[in-house]
Image (cartoon, rainbow, N blue to C red):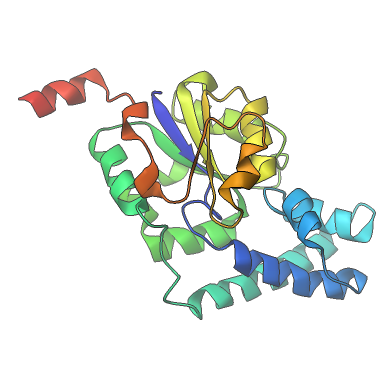
Length: 233
């Protein structure tokens, strides 16, 4: 594969439980009771905040409601991130893999359904500009359909100048895996950050499953010819 596209939440940063907790709190406020585990898997992860709110209330929300609940929920989520410094870090092996990708000039980016406030929070706290061209990060800007629509990965592959079939996507959410599959991504690697390895074995389209980035096979990535020559010198 010529390039790699990373989902962020639950993949590069293992924050799924924080999102679980924040959305469960807000589901009580929105509809009076919490989302179930199944609802969280199927309707929350990989979807836009607008999609989640629409599901919760059973109708299309107005822009004012979406903005209100989104800002409240994401603000609470970011507070919880900062309140847990021990776990407020990139996933095991991520830094080493990102260094490898950067040093070898392998095209890469992030494709996340997080909104800009959160993306900016990640950029600043994890110093993502060390590894990524910030302008090429794809995020929920109000114009991109949520996963499992293929749009986000089609846009991401275009931004790094590659065909989807030449890209690896690393994802943890069912919606994200289905999105990558619909986009024609060459290899889809599931990150078992919250769910079990067995859980992902049942999902069509998954090429392999890892439990952290130390298990990622770097041989899957093609090093550009000019970089190989440079290293041989």
